Length: 69
Image (cartoon, rainbow, N blue to C red; front, top):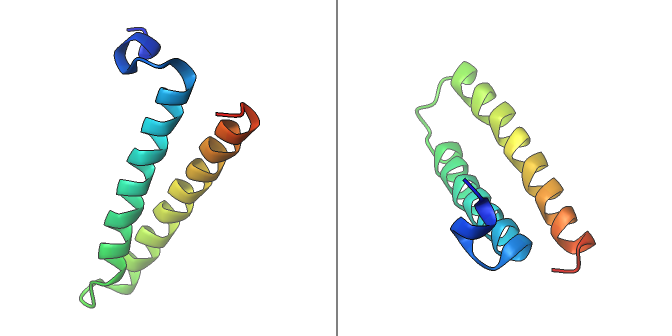
């Protein structure tokens, strides 16, 4: 599938949609952090996964800015 065609608007649309999705996921992680019933092991797993999401968000944001979109 051609992602540009699927999203319309080319690279800018794809990067904006990726960034929007990552913002949504970050919000879900924030909800998980607020759960006082998470075990220490579960909290550690959530934190590790969140760091990965943050890194991906930073890469997508840097790419978007480097392309001037």
